Image (tube, rainbow, N blue to C red; front, top):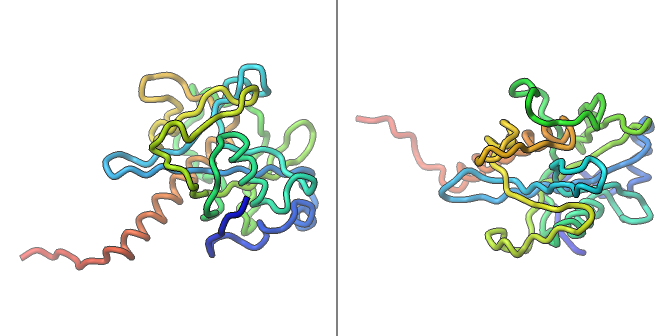
Length: 227
């Protein structure tokens, strides 16, 4: 699958996974994830979340599309994120926009959020790829997440098709729903881990920052100083 990249994407993400790992010798394995936002002129933006199947690991927990990556499967980390997005949702990436790390400041306590302890000691690596590392099954993993734009019309519900056996539901979530860990109807959103939750929140922060900057460049206007 072909895709373009914005200037905000560091060159390290275009490297094969094994080459990327050479600069992160403490990390044993890599994951790549794609984050997708749906804007609206009349309501807050939403992020695409997938719910893991009841028969899979971390059953019925929510996450962004993604999975493990290696040289055997992917020419680069970006290719891994694009592949995982297509396999898990049927969506085809058009442009890779920017990387997302993990929110440093937790907005409130984690109580009643239904977050599992799947990722122990998750931390930002501080590199240009905004890698998040965590300990799982006795190994240190690294995860890179990128925000993408896709070819499909996201207002068409038929565009998203989850893969049986891996995920059983998909949904668009607002920042408020993610922060509170509940859908608007009161149903709990239990995330795979605190790391995933904080990464989604960081994605919303960056999305708002970049969207605001884009609108300022498009409609600079003049200050209204009154009479």
